[in-house]
Picture 1 (cartoon, rainbow, N blue to C red):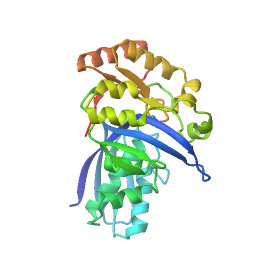
Picture 2: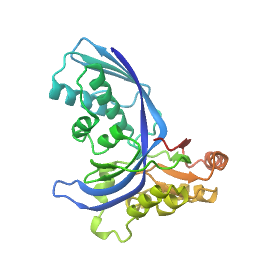
Picture 3: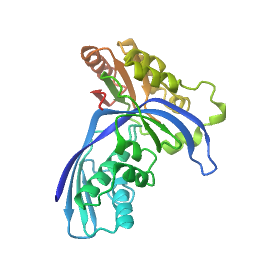
Picture 4: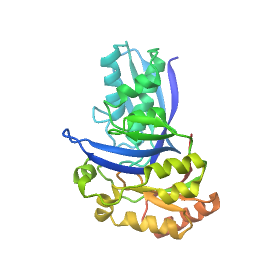
Length: 287
């Protein structure tokens, strides 16, 4: 095998709780993660040179050591010493700096591809153990599906699949630094924690409505005061028929869970008319 095509899928957080801060600056979290239908497309080819070449449809994105695909290649190269390199053609559709793990899922796909192309024979578990060195979301992006994430996000427990449902994803024209949001969070001052166990219970029951009712994200306490448009989009989604709406990750992307595709389509058109979100998508759960 000399070439591989992959879909690097985005994630949302159905629940995101922060339990405390470690001495090294990382936060202990408890999150319910879910893969959705939005994805980046990657074509990865083997090349004889010990090098990595990356071409991206969005020319403002880095293709050097600041790119997580680049970091994934270097990590795998240093760890396993295979001969040769890769050429990556990346078409990005996942919103940038949006709380949907766009960079992490690209890195996860690159690790998966390198394992296949160079016959390294690594299990997904071994890839996940390496992936956390690149970023806390990378192990989940290798696993995908519905999962409970603990620790800094690397301790993963697979959950029953979330029931299929239609979603609207909307990103306002701002970028949010995950590091800035976590650095600004006072975990000791959190007064309302999301019901993570209740979300898991609702998933086990197969109740989309109960999942939506119990969603919560403590990072909204930091990001929404800085960018009130996030709260406006949430309220607009709910006014247009969403069971509930919430910021994903550190933001600024908002997703809403809808009872059916037509209601979701109507909301998408409404949000586009409002003009608060530059990118608006219809998507669905992916397991």
